[in-house]
Image (cartoon, rainbow, N blue to C red; front, side, top):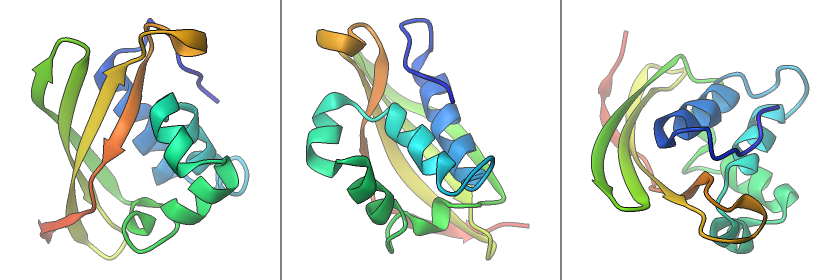
Length: 131
């Protein structure tokens, strides 16, 4: 398990979360979703938590196709002081390519001060067919 640190860049946060979701049940059931939870911004956690509720949300219709996906691509889209948005393309297990807008922000105080963490992931948009 990787934990938030000021040394982890915004793009690395997204990559860590996506890799967890790609291999969700390795080494144990839902460990990938739990990895994604570790990088959920405290503001996001207050809306989506506790972790048991977050797991159900990720397994739902909007985000469930990220689980055990074939591949992903992360492109930086916008950036401002303390905030970055990425266009994330995920090739789902069925070959659909889905686009997500993924936003990370730097935490300004508390336990995770100066750590980049995810504040928002959009519902998926169908972006095409993969390999």
